[in-house]
Image (cartoon, rainbow, N blue to C red; front, side):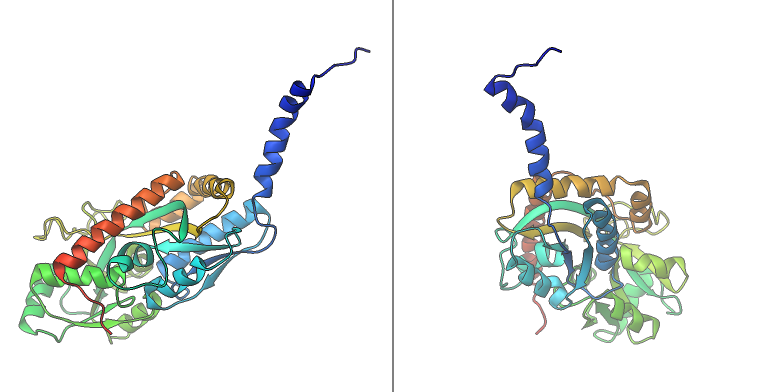
Length: 325
């Protein structure tokens, strides 16, 4: 039998792939991974986080759980994750509120730019201008006329002061030259409950939350907020095409961790999130909510968030928007 002879360099070359594979695998946390959500259970961010957690847990072989830490439109949760150990055991379902709007709106305990490691964009979805289906006025033209005839009386809810829904409302008020009563909630789920109960008349709401109520006939969609109509709701006009040219206020979601995470860990998680987003059942679920444009590299997500922060800072300054105290 011939004996194979290896030089030291050949041995190293032969073992390198195995060593790389082991190092790559070792970057994953060995115990429970938490995905923190800054909103109550039942809202759009929570739904997508749970879908991601289920799939990643199966892939990683460790429990991946969602922890709801509601308050201040996601800012409290973001501040807590920013202080967490960068070992991958604590992640955040970042949201346009905490990582796009809030940095240009108020002082924060964290830096959205420096205190987080972008992992992957999960998706962007339109907001829907909605009302309970028993509201007498259910058209955009009629709503504007109603608000102008009763300034400060028509009640609009939002998922919280400074939330994406609040900012969409403020932009609408400025563009339509109307005054309404804004009632903030701690998340979308309690807001929708009060809308169905007749305590709130209208709201801008993310499609991930609104879809189930629109499909069931409990809510009516008046308009949507992206520049083009969602494939999920092709019959619902955009505000941009309904006399408010250039109006756009979408909601986006993405996975981030604390800064100083090992780049190998970030890349592993990014790869696995992209794998999840390509699964047929996940694609079908995202399509139900109109969530589009997810995936890509950590750099892509980081650049996207940076551009969003600059955009919203300009809008907030131009429209002179402030957070109600």
